[in-house]
Length: 271
Image 1 (cartoon, helix red, strand yellow):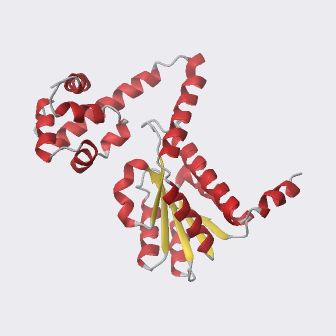
Image 2 (cartoon, rainbow, N blue to C red; image 1 turned 120 degrees about the vertical axis):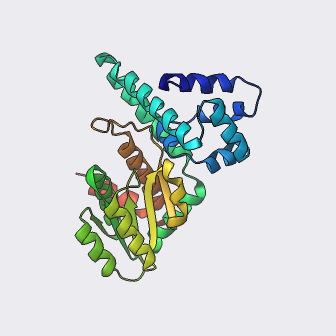
Image 3 (cartoon, rainbow, N blue to C red; image 1 turned 180 degrees about the vertical axis):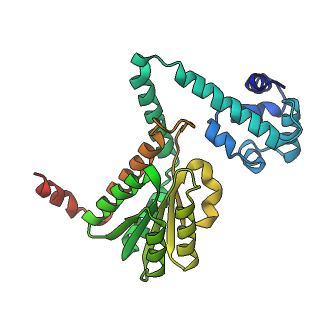
């Protein structure tokens, strides 16, 4: 099957009266990033269908396996999105990117449950010291969180160097909280050192993309930026804006719960 036919075929199946209609409807609500990390078990859970139903759907789309279908479907979604982006006129660019940012904030807010928010607040409050790992362009997000926590008297240190990350784990004191920030979930230095901290018995929080939901079991808490990020990350900052928004929400909830007096102090510090 030609690549350009896949989305049309899925849309055709959406209009059918078979079980495949349920699967097609679900797949068409996902972004390319979300589809790329999709598993058969995710479809089973969200569509309430059996594995044979998923395989039958793939065959109806012209593929012998789910992995083949996912690769081709994801590739077409990425291609279509990038074609749309390249065709945006100059005068439409601000509105176009505002739409992406608004969508990112809405998506991120939708996956921040009250339970996760309260867990984050309690972890931050219980920690005697907080260490943050990040890399690349995400490091400025870590610096933003570092400065926010220092303002309320929390001993906080942000590192983007593997050497200092390792030493921070080796020399950590009791009740240190380790926070990793990696949208992709693939920043090796962040994940490796966060895993070491976890293995040494410290609490761990990972800020990442919603597509990395499978990592829930690896850390004490996962917090998500749910962005419609594209593969062209030279100009697309929506994932980092989502992370900044998420940190702001948690931080101000943290102050309101544990440090309400700081609101007045901030006003006094303004110059």
